Length: 450
Image 1 (cartoon, helix red, strand yellow):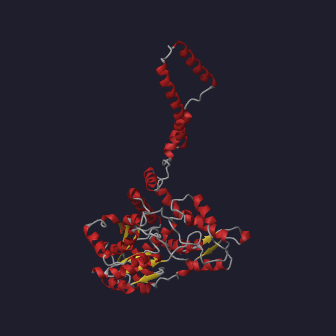
Image 2: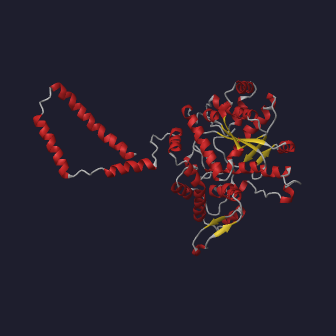
Image 3: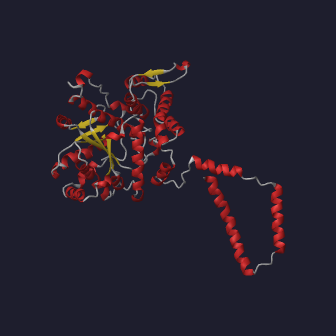
């Protein structure tokens, strides 16, 4: 299953794996060889457990694997990393399942309140599909599953009880240390989380699970306990962790460490501008890491030679183009690339990636879904409705001084001819008028706000 946020690793930690030569990759009939498939499946990953298991499966058929995500906080740009890797899996002929682990989102210290669980699951599904489409991954070749479709069945729950009878508290806490929110007095829900993630491998009928290296302990738990339940041990594929904008892990729960996928272009520029990117420092550099983990791989997916261009005035050396991340990293380490120029180029490239995702969510239905999943207390406004109200307001005949005086004169005349109201009625009318006076400005404020 998945951690609350998919991640990848510091740029310097993952060596770039060149693809196999075409002559070695293709079999006698033009199909990929087993080694070519293994290369595609494992390249760019920080660690793989069970490569021999993968080879054994590939001798018989294509590999089945899954990647999961728990719909907790709003997804951030770190989600591009597993999406790019999923493209590799598909190229290797893998059957890929994407799991929306909604029950796990609730179990993880109630990061997703029960009454918002369905809306957040739908939000994640729409957003993940928009990301995949934006980077050219064919979603018709993927299987999408919601966790509660099978996690509430009799068979699954019986296995969960069997697992609970053999899984120690020590192993449960250790397995979830980097994924489940840790507290001094942990909830029982957080302790059963890792075991249920292990069970998902069996009930999704896969040969391997893909996730961030922060889930390694859960993967090891699965390898230890699934055989005790009579199920086979699966392989595990781990990408590295992409540093956040402040240098630490990019997290959905830390707004200062991430850029949301629906952030406006100006917000993207502002956040990138504030990101930690020390001149010459290539270690904990989230800006450089994103170029390596996302921008170069996506450029390769779209065909042609991958390249990254930094634009700058001639007086500062003019534009510079890098055909590999290693060249860019070396230039930055040697201070040939200024952090300000790098940030500007990354912000521009990132906004190009995010534009189609923003456009996909620019509908009244998805804006309403977003508000339901992550309530702000503000009514979603559509551009069409705003223009319509504004048009009506402008078409209204403006009140002149003469018309105002005329209305006042009529009111005075009516007061003269009208019989005096009984004291009781007057007492009722007076509070009513006062109440109306209070109400009108509030309604006016609501209209103005919309």
